[in-house]
Length: 181
Image 1: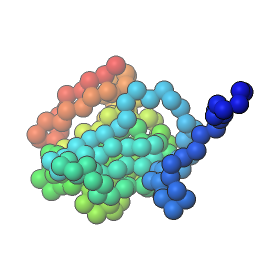
Image 2: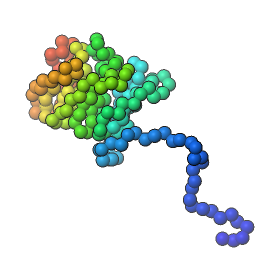
Image 3: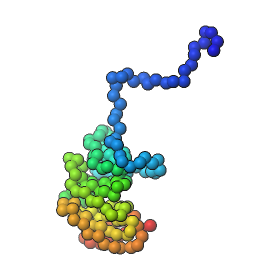
Image 4: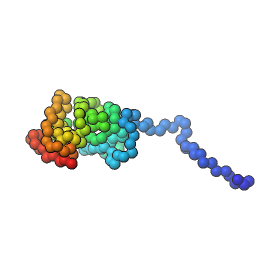
């Protein structure tokens, strides 16, 4: 370099002082990191927006996007979230979330408490809340599994031989419209 010209350095320093604290990352997940996810799992109620970051679900207020609570009981990355917006007892209050480890957790949105847990044998592709407060799961084998969160009892019924990708329970909670791939 010639004399009189300031030297340029390729190293960069942060403008943060040592006293500033950065936001903490989500709790570690045991799922290996893959960059292939097209969409992040999310759901909404009348008051809250739920968003998954790996194995943690953030509950944000619609108006301010302020974090109300973090649900961190999943050990692996969350695949989907479904909110009970239809039942008389839990409308807008109960949530079911499902992770890569094939575990579905039903939890209370207002308290963050776990209500029930369901360990699936096969991958669950979809969930739909029913008016009676039960959950209908559809799996990759074409089964519809009815799960009752209050007792953790479940009943499985074979429907088709293709993966169930959409479920729409009727008001009677006994018949369904089923989408498959």
